[in-house]
View 1 (spheres, rainbow, N blue to C red):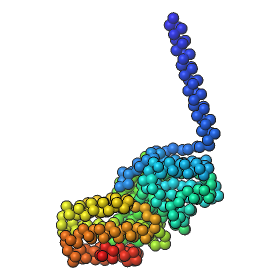
View 2 (view 1 turned 90 degrees about the horizontal axis):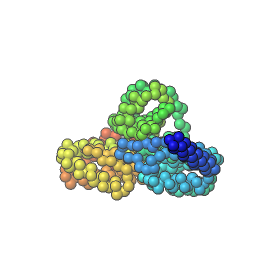
View 3 (view 1 turned 135 degrees about the vertical axis):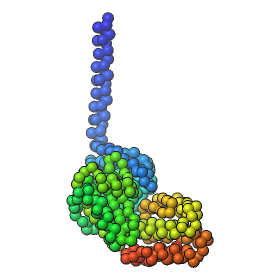
View 4 (view 1 turned 120 degrees about the vertical axis):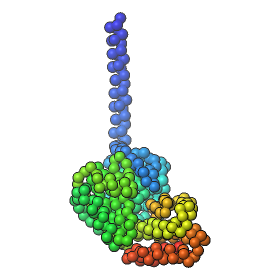
Length: 364
């Protein structure tokens, strides 16, 4: 009796294994028929001002997809509120890069040229089949990617030891204009932007398979990354492309806000400063800007269509601050604070601030 029961159990086990094998083989066959060889990786989970939103997985399709398949995958990612980069490599050698924030397309490039509108579907219809890569990443990283994308003559990668990075970061503080580093290891990549001489602003992003980190923690982790060697490129800040202009304006906004709010806080206290900061948050939320007000600082990682749009937005923020502090401390003190902030800018920063009229808009 026990022998018969044991035989029945073995036979049932064999049937279950055969059924599982058939299911697995049918799924493998369907995958081959569809030609979709997708590689799924863990997404970057950001602990920054711009937290990662779904989709939870990045996607890479090494097999070329038809135009309708590309559209379907991209729409799906945008519908899932992607914050990140979408890259299509067409079979004719052209490329399309889409930058999106919370599912909204903010910038479209063909090769290294900006598309005047945000019609990302037209290049797919025009160029047809291509491979697809979707990478969730913080908006700050996309700001830096735009600089690299628009660089006509990018510098050659150079080797470095990871333990040298901290010294490299410190040396950039003496540069007159901002400096952007792009580091690549086998299992990570990182960016570090330094504002330059007189503007102690640093922004860093570290992207790994485990997640994305920004700010001081990213700098710390890059300097102590587990791989001993890396390759890096250096971009020197100037006004030769729109992406660099936008980053210059971004640095100016954060610099001006820090100086103005710090002086205002010394005169009125933390409560009044926080009131001004919350007004900035309300304005940014209404306009759809990716701004994070801190105690006496403002951090912005918005993606703008062009530098003029960035200048207009930042002028509104500075005007908002003036509108908050002037009734409290008076016109004379307000103008004195603005003058001190403006006088502290030098070189290309001063030229850009004057050309975009940032302080002029704030003084109105």
